[in-house]
Length: 267
Length: 237
Image 1 (cartoon, chains in turn red, orange):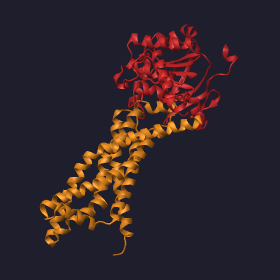
Image 2 (image 1 turned 180 degrees about the vertical axis):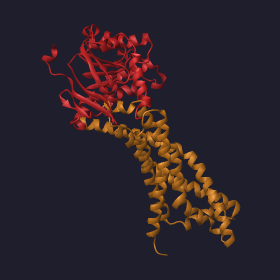
Image 3 (image 1 turned 90 degrees about the vertical axis):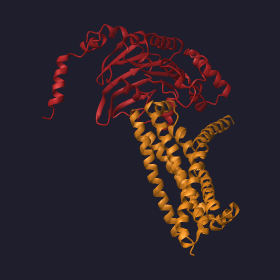
Image 4 (image 1 turned 30 degrees about the horizontal axis):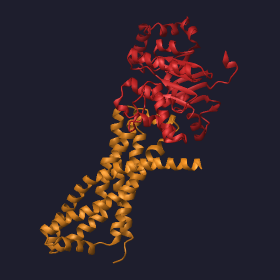
């Protein structure tokens, strides 16, 4: 594999993350190589979104380490963190566009703050980015005037604004109709083809995961269940992986025991 | 050179954000503050006249209004209105941004939410609170004049002269000094409550409520402390 040649862009070792006293990630190891498209697949509450937030430095790990481009996020100074953040783009689940600004201003914001480009150049770049995500002519709309799918596209345009090396997507197709979701998948595939981007997508949508991924990391209850090329995952015989891929509900026998425990605990 | 120009551009944008905030917290508060402090002026004149009349000193009503408005009620009423309009809005705005991950988005774009959101609000408050306090001083005195002219035998001119004679510059400056601190507290509490919003819509409501309640409490405490200081440090009569 190519990971032998170039150092990983992102690597995590023994990563643990806690919310209060509840541990959400119980020691996660992963490596992402430059130019790879990795899909982190997992059910609700599996810890996949927490993993993404930790990889971009929004959550502090309670144990283990995250290295992005060789810098340990926990040890990095604010200046180093900012330098890394200028090289990554994150498209949030709900878009997270700044509501008080127009779509165009949202996309121009990182350029205005972090580059010394002339306003006219920035305006052209905003139009290019909007065109890339299929939102030409929407720069004067406010985020609240956009549909869910358009917000996600605008968020992708903003994530692309600084021409990042690493692009993160949090649930890119969640809450969208199948046509809109397919459109977002196409967009990710186009970005993958057009640029030497490292793309990390967090999702629970099986179809889109297998469509866009080079490699799939299946995460379950805060631990990595399987990690490998998309085809290998698809053919996996591991029961828990099969259960997820074949969309089988948790067996009711387990549920009943758990259920009884809820009522009898502490008695 | 390019760097210098760029940093000036940058400063230009945060200045723009501050001006935008100053419009929202200051200029748009003028009509409601005008109305409220004018009526407060009338009320103080009426209440004062009730007491002064019994002493046969109704002509002192102008001085009573002038001193109570400039030293206390002008800045305080302005602050309470600003808490209701803007302290709550700060908490709600920042809280909603937390809930919709906009704060996280700023952070991942390497933008400091403090510099981006708090500094313009704080700057706007520090400039606009004293301005609003001056304005409400003026409106309160005009409210007093309404009673003075209609109920206490003053002409408009003589009421203003009586007001001027009753006031020392200190009365106005101590009020303005207080209002500067009111502004700082209102911005700080509103923003702090916004940032400490948890997940969910009801949390935004909770932080808005505590922004208002805590701001009012702190404004009153600061008022008490300052008033005590000014009282102890007063010139001997």
